[in-house]
Length: 344
Image (tube, rainbow, N blue to C red; front, top):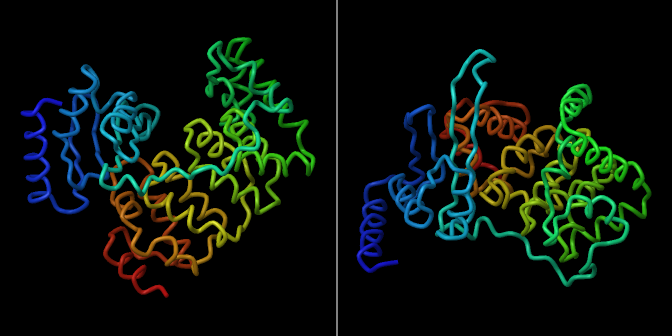
């Protein structure tokens, strides 16, 4: 970066620290959409836009590709760009853009977990039938082909949508469905747990995460998938999120994985944050875990509580109400923060 440009960013950063309150968020109306940026502390909207334009000319905050620019070029801990449409009814053309960032100074909050020594460096023969057909010539896996169909919890909707797809998409879903159906033994579960925690081949970890959706009765399944939401590979994190969505809800004792849950609620994997909030509320998270999960770690929960993004406030409030034994304290952060601080 040129010397003049570096000086400019230093000045902008200094002005941002002096002028912007902690957790200042930005909301504005852009052509065609309402925009909300969450997670800003030292950075400003202008700094984001100018930095993205410098490293990736032509990109904007509305570009999905800017997530990679923010993470890889600007060293943000994480970034999420989410587009919403139809949230005001089928006849509404209202659009909303939610941009969420973990600034570089907070990057440690997004720490992806480190995998232990590798026991499965190559694609396992048992997992090859699911992974190889959606792998390109360079060894890259097409997650969209692997996941399509699994993301629809409503079977009638899934059948209707699949009927509208081409033969390749239908064959992809039939293949992964058959794979899951033929891996329901306890030995399959035990291997998937080991693979998810140790394999350096991310295709193995993707298959293992999806396979674990066959075993909702075991708490270890839920724990392994929550840990996998912090996997260093984005496609594995996506597979874990899909698998968690497929598990029928029941009460779960989350105490053994509070460290992972705290990290996720604190900004690790922004794309999964609302999933985690729903998950904890739906599985009757114990109020006794409030302090371990949120004390000194409530910034993102409060941001979503007061966000304009569709459904975000409801999800944040749902978690808080669940942790408070079913009692609500309103829509403002103040009472909730006081309550969190009082938990022992």
